[in-house]
Image 1 (cartoon, rainbow, N blue to C red):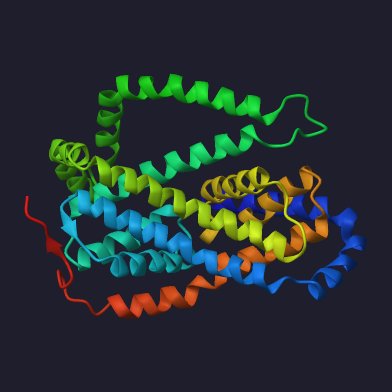
Image 2 (cartoon, rainbow, N blue to C red):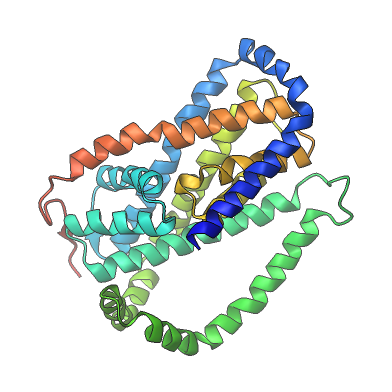
Length: 329
């Protein structure tokens, strides 16, 4: 699996270079683009990256509030920014991010079972929003000249598959749980999962009793993705012209899926290659594509690192439970 992800990244990058190669002579346009940069759009593109960490931190704060905790937004945003370190330094995909989150939330007093609740509900909210964004953007994509089927038809097929698979997953949940128990019972983490499942009804009641917070959670999930989509869109505008917004959203979300599949640290390689391939497939100017994607990744990949570094040093000396306060039940 470790080697496979690098093979996939190498394939994606190689295809992206192969697709860009015929346009190398056009890259003289990069000098023209550089001379005509709109710094207002460029500044907005950089600033909107902050929106991702605000959405991440706000979502975590809301979900922990549902679980019965009172933690200020500043703290959850700090932990969200530390995720950047996990994504960059721990080459194990989302597992590294979850481990980092678990460590710091335990440090401030959140119980293991509630960290599992946070991880599951955070994933459920963000993945739901991602799928909605992806299907909606696919429905409004321009038709590809070399493909006989419109991508909106594919989105309809995916919706049907989701509607069919979801009931099957619910019906087979006991079987899935027994198989998972058989495979994971040897791990220490599994005991916390068992504790979480034994308190599942408590968490269900908490969700049902906090419907307004659930709606806010989905709003935070929307901000989490929308900020990055807007940042990429403004990166294009900084160099003169942006593709259709639905294409920008679709391409960004598709790059997230590619990064997840490859488990690349912060999606490096896979994200850039996927974006370039999709934009070129939709006949977006190669020089414009290269410049916008490069700038966007500069903002999203490199700029958050200092913030994560400062947040890490801010939180590492906290004593257990120092900033955690359990709300009355």
